[in-house]
Image 1 (cartoon, one colour):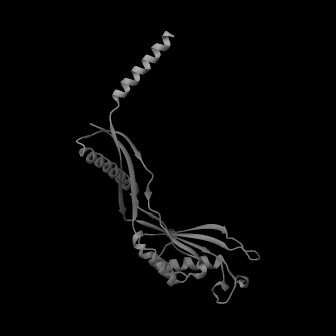
Image 2 (cartoon, rainbow, N blue to C red; image 1 turned 60 degrees about the horizontal axis):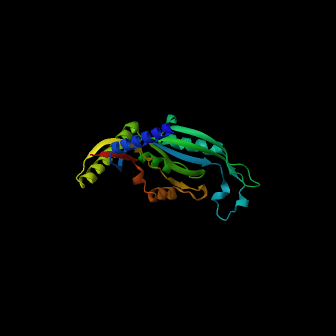
Image 3 (cartoon, rainbow, N blue to C red; image 1 turned 180 degrees about the horizontal axis):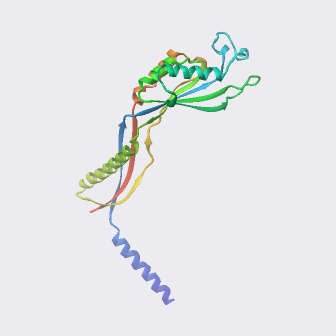
Length: 237
């Protein structure tokens, strides 16, 4: 019984001492953004076999009988890309396999062609040079920059500094000062996503492709947008 009383007294004293040692603190969020120019643009073209009758007026799906095979579509696209100066080492072709099969029809094979270019102007040349028949969709798959990791560090550092500045001016309004850092937590953020340009091969034309790109606001997609947010806790002096 005596030992139990001693343990309780010890724990109470320990809690009181710890409570006295706890310093007041302030927790704030800080964020930072940066737009950087890409030095590599990956442009993805999804292609699939199609029916000749798709592009004839007055034809229903039951009338689709003449399939244009992948062995005809792919070489034509690769030839068109070569004609505008795109080398083979800039092109990656990925097999997807069989496309969805409608009852009573053959399978339609599909592939993806990824093209690496340095300038956005080349994307317009690509779109203007290829036959839209057999094109399922096009999109900017990724924007790259060889120094992206260094830019990410810079944005995160700026976010932490923003949190520090916020804590400082908030405390100054109370005639208090910011103390040492207690904790830092990085919230989930990152690079901005990029939308598809268009889809639906049966309604594609060169004019509709260009119109889709204009409507999507491609000027807003020319840079890599980085954004990071930091939660930081500081002691109050």
